[in-house]
Length: 246
Image (cartoon, rainbow, N blue to C red):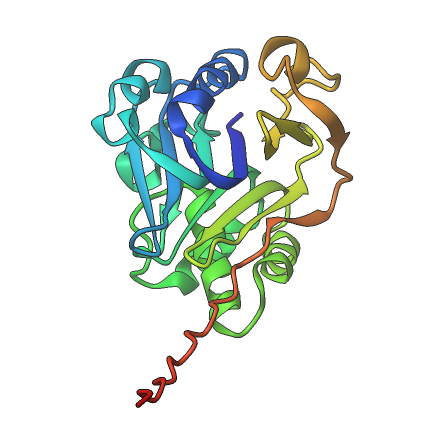
């Protein structure tokens, strides 16, 4: 029953402009069992995040890290776990690969427990999502890009999955694979946003959460979408000394 939201902007935007919609997404999505916000820190070229175990409406709006935060990339996860016994920080998303990336999941992987023993000591929690995340990292390290890694994880772990990835390169990608909580892409306040749909098979997302959204499009199941492409570093231009005149 989790909800996921990602947003990409051309220039840094204050998170507090996005926060009211996040509160409504949590409220109408029946979250409140953990939350996390990841963002791209342009100054350091790193992905950073803050997480909590309770409601974003209570904790997130008071989090000092978010009060003055501005970024071009955001990834938000609002938790309502399949198993309430997994309410602990180790299972709270997004999961972080150091400062290189953030990743989150909405849905349930039916074959996660079959694959868990093969993860050895790399798992810190008990949720199926962490098994999917570790599998995703393995595919990335083997040379896949995020979108093909999404597909590989969804195929191997079975069940249903909406997935999101934020990389330190600025890449922001999603996978729409949960038929019980379809994903929507839309434009809001000059940014491109992709969000889950409140586990409602209609367009209530736009009546209750993103009321000012335009260019609304429901993603087809199985879609791997790059919301924002990774940035290609621009090589520095060598300065050629100008000979003195006279």
